[in-house]
Image (cartoon, rainbow, N blue to C red):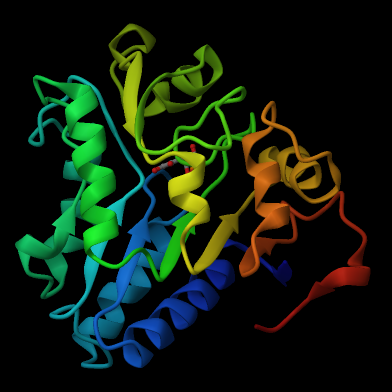
Length: 250
Ligand code: F6R
């Protein structure tokens, strides 16, 4: 695991974007796993800038998002479909056929999960998976207690996750109770994982990820066992970590 510290959120986002840009340039048909939430917004802004500066094209890029709420239409402003259009896809040249998110409105949710997992495999797997982390250690929406063997599945969201995400909704009651998420195993199959962490409210989670036991009660701890993980975190998120094994460059 490589840990890179940046001064702040902006520099974390910039460094992450440089890494993703390099991946897009180096791989013929890159398959990128995407996250939503507050953390990757800055990264997406930098990717859009790089596209406008003719540095990269998304014409050959395929994407698979980690998760989507159950019961929200694509057009719902709180859906992750909507988020991705707003923060990335509407501004770059990615063909819509290359964009994949789970369909939280599917009649048969289990079938949707199997089909999503199959689509990832058919695309040849994910080259680089972008992750954020929940304060309870979730990655994707794999809440504490999720099996490390899980593939794409329906999850009941923790009350703490619904509370954390209530900031995007009119009220807590409107936050969906379920989501479809890639499983831990689906995430771990990615060739590379790029975890972004920002802010002091994530410091305890990051410390537990790095120093805690590998345990299903803290899903992100599994990342300790992946061969190719880069964590880009700002100073605030790394405040509990000794500088000894933290680097300032990629
Ligand atoms: C989002 C996702 C979640 C978030 C996590 C952190 O697709 O899968 O795991 O990465 O909840 O969210 P933020 O970045 O809003 O703190």
